[in-house]
Image (cartoon, rainbow, N blue to C red; front, side, top):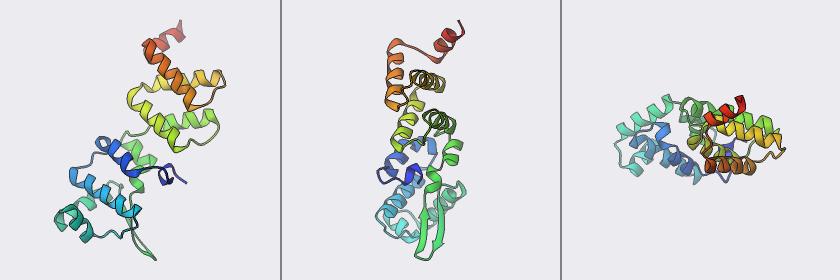
Length: 179
């Protein structure tokens, strides 16, 4: 199961948290949120229902849906049970990597070091660090945690917090390691 398919992952929180990076227009963002809401509540999604819910003209809905499909954020599939409006592309690593949302190599480094798959909370914490902390510093903290055989996100977080209090930067760390 992929991280975004877990029951405890809030799609709308994730979408709103990454809205500026997804590069969605206001209309596209509203449509994505309504589609996600309808999917979660198992309410059928149609062009007409989207137009009614968003107060957009059907032509505007059609254009925005076409753009979402072209970006691979939205996929409309026909199944035995009806039409499925899937937003999986919005959360997929490839799409996220292209948009600069997640650095898959950072996740890979943690998974390799931990020897297991990361859970969604760990991925979210790493994404949070990645937004505010230099990637190199995150990797140095991971290496230090590994050296002390303390392979947990909490321990890496403690290292990063301590370094931030001390004003440690990736450049300072690299200088210390080279001397």
